[in-house]
Length: 454
Image 1 (cartoon, rainbow, N blue to C red):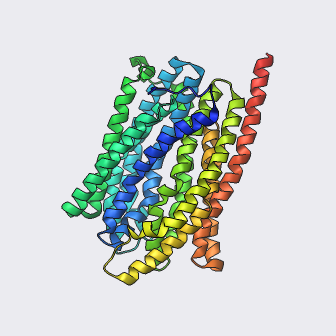
Image 2: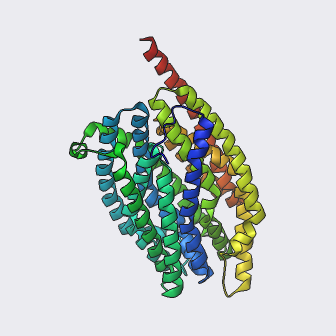
């Protein structure tokens, strides 16, 4: 199988589908981290599952900063590859490594120092807050592995290779499953065992992608590429920082929502968190398609093929709606049996109440999946076109919509107001991104025409 994929020629639909499928498969295996943790921990008690699930938004806040920067760095690599400028590509790779090292040190320090005060501020349930802290201490210790995997996998996908990241995530998921059973059920290590299993899988996926990058001829860099280059670093940070900040903003909205939820009855908190723990299944197809169309847009922008960018985005939008309807329908049909696998406790009433809340929330989110998938594809296309500011602003829109609706709607709809607030946040952000995409394309077309005229 080819080590790279040039998306500047050939059928956009074919490229998107062939590039998306391995990403979907890879993300599906990556979701096994969450699912296996939830299943195994859920067999311990509802309290243990709630402790791990409550960590979700805070976990995402810290890890997504590293992931956002890595995604931004990959945009520059994709554009350089599409333009055939391998000297620039090598400089981008070298400077990305430098910036990633600095990021890891800073974020790791902040995460460990402020973890407990943030958990207290969020009003975490008293019976689970210590378990949540123990779980996150270990997860945050794996930040260098998360950064490494996302950076190296991003390099590979930027040059059209989505196969190696798939293999890496399969191996990581299998490792995680085996160690989850061993640590939690065999050694009775509880949530700490689940966290150790997760970072062990991350270590393996990072190593596999690193080896693949080192073996890829187009990624061979020289020592001079690892010397500080202020110009390239500024360009990389201009692409990466808005994405990281966008993730931060979305995470803050999620943390505020979690704080509001923590004020409801315990069964609602447990059910809401149980569904959120499975949320990766909801967004899997949309995120994967978004990754593909972002790489497609970056390569074709580098090649000056804006006509292909427009056609590719149009096809991606159509696929988004179809996939959203399909996945949403499957979740509504099979959501309750799936949730019941993860919700276990000695008290049958607690299980029944938790399951009822979890399924209600799952149904509402399933109905809005097409809008969420459109949000993903337009956001990553804009990023692939070099515009990371509008996606960042969309994060603000998502933040405001989520907080306002989470605070106001429960006054009218009670607990259902919390469910609806998520859909409202998606709609608000998607509308801005769709407008921003067409604005960006018109701007780039104007610049291209001026360059052609000269």
